[in-house]
Image 1 (cartoon, rainbow over the protein chains, first blue to last red):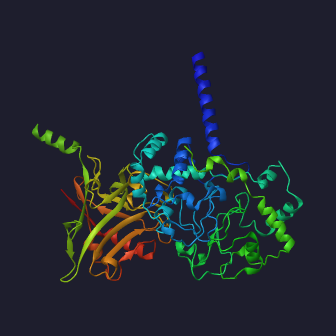
Image 2: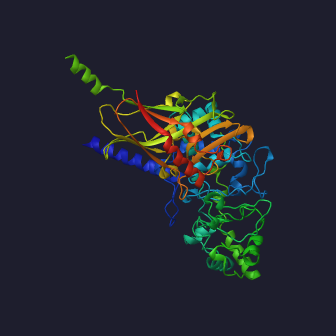
Image 3: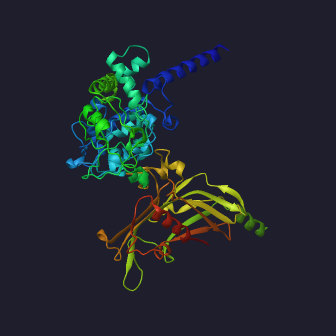
Length: 336
Length: 219
């Protein structure tokens, strides 16, 4: 009998230890919706997340072994590419869009500015294969990994198998990306009643709820859908956005609504990085909108903001900066 | 006694198989061969790959067997992919399969085996499996290297490319499933239609044509 009890206690402890270990890797912040990513199909483990992190920072994923995911998704700038309106890849080739910031990806079902990618696991295939990004093929990447002692060892640790597959490579990258959760900004502390907004931030929050939150919906600060936000068309790019994928004219010039979390660090803004400053973005929404046929219905009524309002709104947007996310040592280049 | 033994052998033979033969005009398809289209034009096939999924054996109207291996990537130039296992001692009058990958699987993330993205059957620029891939070249195609490329896929309405194929059977054993590329090419004007590489109306139309180029024989 005592043996049975001991076994029960040990298994309970093991279960608790497992729970704690998983919680450290990924946690749903309080009052957040249920994640969309199906963790049952790819349960997070420390070894797999670490493997994904190694892959994320390793230029081995590119054809010339010079460009890594982090080249365009740097941790200190909310995993986007600062200083470039359009991101560039191998041989200094310039793409057509600004690399999106990466965070809270477990809550998204479509990826890229046009939603071309239908699952986080499949996301990495796009930059790996794009001739202006990493210019390689998953087949040859897997072959390179297979010839690397380091990766054979890391895959063995993570999957108990020295055979490296595309599936395991992609799922490991997903694991790391899933851990990039930003939910610890001043805004979050205020929501958890641990601190207060200043008067100015609070005024800004009220303006935000009035004018912005129908698309940049809390707590993700995006409704994760696609909208035409009235940007004048850049004739040098003629980017049709979502329509490229759906071939539906109703989707022309629609782009995925980006999160505003860590907006202080994720400049430049818009799918083509045309705005460097938050003030330029606010100017666009107040006086720069092009009223095309499928302008987002949320933007059809003019947004009127005084210069004081803009200062207040900006003060609120800066409360979305999450330094524990931006400078989390678990997110940075792996040091062995 | 001998009769019983033979009957026993026939009934319990363990190797009932479904062979897949990839042909051009009823001849086995080879990558290095030029096939004549007429007196002046010819073509070469460099790649033929497609998915056979959710294979079922049907007797009358009743499904009598479903393949537990849901997805088979058939590669004309990789012999080991050209043999599917079906159970012995089972009577059926039809086989049913899907040409391609169902929509749920298309949105379910990274998978292994024949569905692994390293197999070159998953689009990278826009998520989704290529259900049927045919590549080659012909003097009829005024394209780079005279190439033609048909990557037929797409799982979203209105361009869902997945096709269901039914083939009636005369016998339940040692079946050979033929796919004859010539019958597909004959339905096209190759000089005009030679690059279909994204989900579209054209891709769906061509996928429907593919369903008609399957036939069976018995060994």
